[in-house]
Length: 276
Length: 253
Image (cartoon, rainbow over all chains, first blue to last red; front, side, top):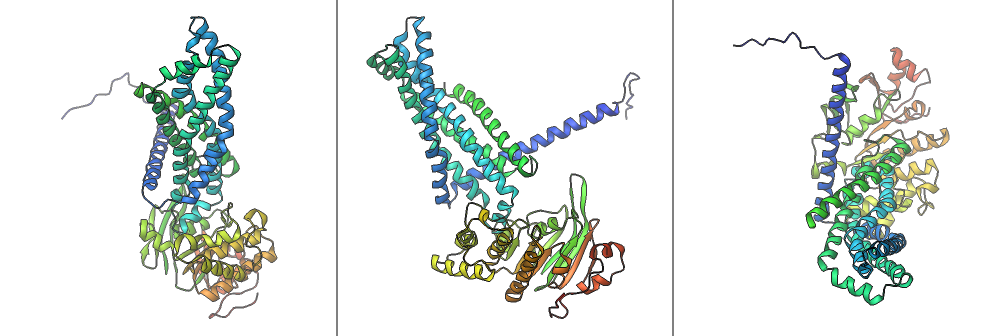
């Protein structure tokens, strides 16, 4: 048996400090709980993706929406990104007398990094926000409840087709971005600034390896998963986590785009450090 | 057929149900009334299994709704139809596709049979000729009719109606109530109607239950409701006549 003696210098917490700590604790628990729900959402989506049946028509529709309808945007952004790289790369390399390496520089930058990341950011802004808004409005107007009450699985209709479509579309869009960007870089570096085609493409072929291409593909695949995971989750739980009505959908859409974009950049770092 | 036993539920510390108990017999239609925000729609969602209580249980035809999962929950929901307050039609599909959707996804019927069934159901609700319009192109009353057709197309044994006339003008609202009554006479489902429309609905239901302060405050036939002395009940139903399905006969209000 022992006696605990309270130190005479110990002061009880003031009510305001106590309630601040309680609020901090409650907020922390709330966010940890949401992260858990978000994690389970991804697990269920992957599970229903691998276990048949697949809603094939809906999947095709989403490939068209996420992939085909993003091509023009990718062509524009890829082209201008390549052209900017051509300018900046030429003037930077010229300082070291290495302008002959413009081709590998543009190629490697696009294939390993800018292609996957910028394609993913464009698709997030265009398709990701639309997916969040669509699912969010379905949540607000009880269409998801209606699906459940028909004994149907909302994941199979709303999440899985998007997930599979993004996993197929993102690598293809990234490839288009890379090709257009490389030619954009040649347009500036070659046609405008005088780097020969043989030098530009020849050196690129010498320095760009299959491993670099695969790195870009792995990144774009994982970015596709991130985009659909975050955007579908935010729409699915609109009204539950973001408030009701049009403001709730608006908030969900904003959060989806911001969180997707940040996660793409963070995950890009981790993938680069793993694959490097 | 539906037993609600001692249900407790709260939201953000606000107690909505404090021991709700109710029983609805097979083939019976119950009107659920009460002030806005008393939890009528929430109770309906508990019956449908969309929400789970903190305490108590909902039993549908001997099977517990709050613990049912997977196939057993799907089997229960296959026997259930729900008319949502806003209709909840899928806005990317036209009226025909909406009504056909449960049949296409849940049955192995041929396209021809599905088409015949859908057109028959749309005719029953007075929507012939509007099959290829989208939800944004039709009126509120037509949305409710289409939603009713979709919920009835699977011949459910239980029908739940969440404020079927809210947002509609009195004439259209009355028409929807008449439609629900004719569907009940045709299909003999067990039903719960959440409503504020005392004068219309009391004429077609067998019993009424009033929610107030988290409990079933009063319960009885429509006629009994008008003779209750309790001030809460009187304030809600007023002195507006009498009505109700007495011994299975439908009385005009």
